[in-house]
Image (cartoon, rainbow, N blue to C red):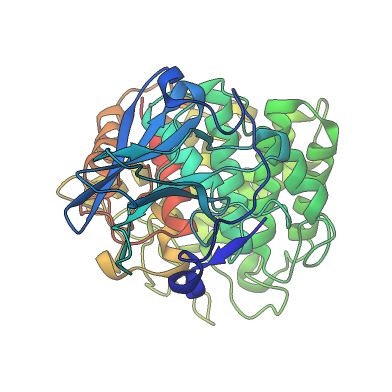
Length: 464
């Protein structure tokens, strides 16, 4: 199999036809397009007046390329990638327009490779005779699980998954949230095509970082612990619940009397802030709700909330600031959306454990403040606006995921319109035709990023 890396493609796409192995899903490579169930024109491009079209038959999970308005000797082919276009199989199905024809097409080739757990993307490319210029369409994938927005966005997220490493690269903690979003998608859609990602991620990474999904950052450990609670809910595999317990116990080891309690942001014990404590609240309460006869985690969850509510990180507006100063006062740091979200999920779990309705009232005050104050024109927006990069790209999705959990636990439809508005604005404004979504949910797609895509899938999952 010959791969063309993005930095070298200008040379390699013009090289002789690459060797590749046949791939099969519904059918196998080299099927006649006349047998296609459907013909979705996914993308197009032009070169020297030639029209290059990428055709996708979603029900077949296959694609082909065509060239029109051309001459004898014009070339057309597919490129096929297993990692969202970072590299690809070059000149798949390469063919030339024969004498007496103005147009031609390749055979059909499979887009996804489920037997090897690969999620594919394809594009159509072509050139006019001996002229050196090559034109390629944008990358596209098939919609075998249906064309619902969440299904398309889930496929785009899985295109970023590194099957070899068994994880989403670049961000350890965002990968935990990507897994959580995928489990939510599988649970709510009923589509099991990507279910393998749960065991693969668990098996490949339980020895990574500090081992057992821990590292020096206490919030990172909390994200993974909650992902394994989600995995347990879907699969009932006790390995995942045991891992979540291990992670909760690791977090609680950093609880001390500084500022009267609370866990630290890292094992360096230099900053006490909101997010690790919100995560511990949610994780401890979640464990209690899933372990018959538990008293330990319920005691710790109650202890966490009593401290969190009293320490002052919730400001007069009802929003949660980032953390505490060295003298244990609200540092008036940014009111990131995820700091408003995780506490909602935590209070929902604690309410399930105790039936204490004051917890729903406390959560409702934060939810009301966040939906009113952190949405520009009704659409969520971080303090960094359209300039967000890195960690902040994941925050909005975490907020809507937890707002959805809180509203469902409370039996309320109060926030349904807000949740629908986020998903609608995201999908109609910030996502491209192939389900890749941008950083600002009220503006056109800008760039592909793991945080953007995880956040988008969370929003689409949470749409009532």
